[in-house]
Image 1 (cartoon, rainbow, N blue to C red):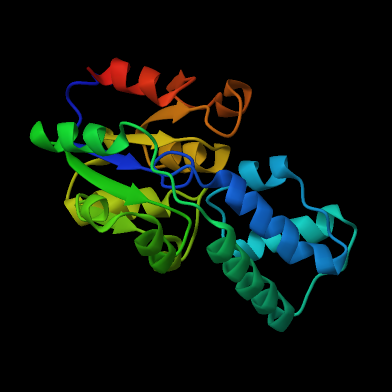
Image 2 (image 1 turned 90 degrees about the vertical axis):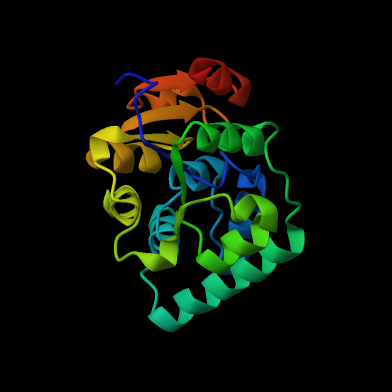
Length: 216
């Protein structure tokens, strides 16, 4: 893909727009600990973008625990949300707002595609930055989460842009798989996982600064 010819750019939120992945790990670890389930940081980072029920199910499976009734799953999800809200300190990655504005000034449409809920996205992002996105697709707005392509296909459909004309910026395997399954060019930044875990991306970068340089 000619990086100068894309018409839309879609950004994952956690780990790309905001430096929130450490807080996601803390919230999952503390929410699952009362059930004698010790979730690893690697599992949380690898499953970024997945539905929360799937994360809980896999964490219990890895711990050798039986499957849970939906009522218990809902309790864990609620506790995880409370912990995340209480411990979170929002840090927008340096240069991301300026990068998004630069793309828009060039006529590129921009979207936010996240596995987090819409409410969480609204709470995480400064209002001025949130309003820059031409479309937002959150985890509770789709039937299937990443690694299914539905979130990215939905974003392209919302903007009436062909998938071949879209570029995605991700930081996790599930998001990369979703982007590629949607037929989109994918750039990955190693913010939470090393490049070894991002092998399916078309372009891989160590830092956001490397990403910005690539698109200049």
